[in-house]
Length: 377
Ligand SMILES: *Cc1c(COP(=O)(O)O)cnc(C)c1O
Image (cartoon, rainbow, N blue to C red; front, top):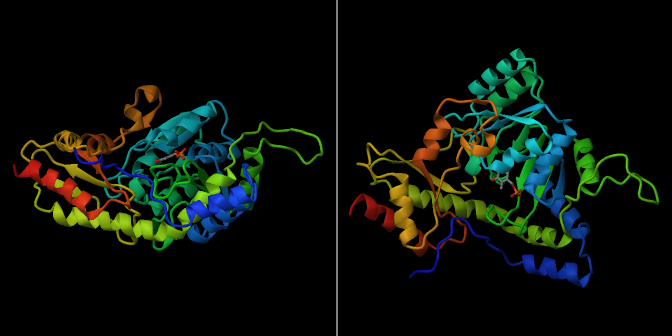
């Protein structure tokens, strides 16, 4: 049996270990320290956001963003339905209600048209949504122009879930820097990793100061432990931030490498009838975190995404159906949703292919030849 090929595995550069060693040598083994501060600076430089707070996870970053926007029990928050559950879970941590909005076909992300339908309907039902959470899924930026125009019209703040899209841009501007706040993730499978971690970015200093305050148990300024807020233990460890500093040195290369993986699949799978790729709208640049394909079973002669997934699995290769929309998840059955069938169709017909920046050419060729074999047995 060949060695396992993963969907997306960690890819260390040359300096990560040296930064971690420096943390040991200087005894900064804590959820604060010079690496944390420098990693935040690196993130600000890279994204162009004025401020960044390094946190324990992307989920924690989103949770703090909702808290700072005043989301409380019984409130409603609009969230993209086509996403990973971590986009929606923090809404429920606050006792609030997620309102799911389906996708549009150009980016697979939140449909601006349905967003407006949802806002109007919630207002008619007597509640104004407290926030809007679009997601830049698989690295493809959402239609931020249209989403922001609607958000401004109804005066609702936007939190961008950019957990999968570090390195993606619209007309050169980084995802995560369009809304009031942006959420980043450095989990093990993301384009760069700190083993586990996240960040909140914003141009608003108050949000980031407040995020750091809440993330470190909300201690008031006093020599003793004094608290006038409920705090959280959400800060990033100085060890993890050391890994992050090393990863920031290679992030640009990682984006180039992931995009090359996409280009290779695109070129070599051209002959497979019924297979299609998601191209970038004008001005959009995706980090191509994962390469995704859609299979049209009518054009493919009955081949489905499951045919491909099982053929790859038999050869010890990991692939995965696209995210199952939140409005179809058992846990969110009772949440209101505004649907158009797009995300359900994507889930039924789509699959993520191995896309790691450390995927060797020979490994990509193995994946490609197995898929081709399914189409031309
Ligand atoms: C990974 C991910 C998150 C959560 O980030 P963690 O750092 O794993 O908590 C949130 N949203 C999306 C879309 C993600 O892919």
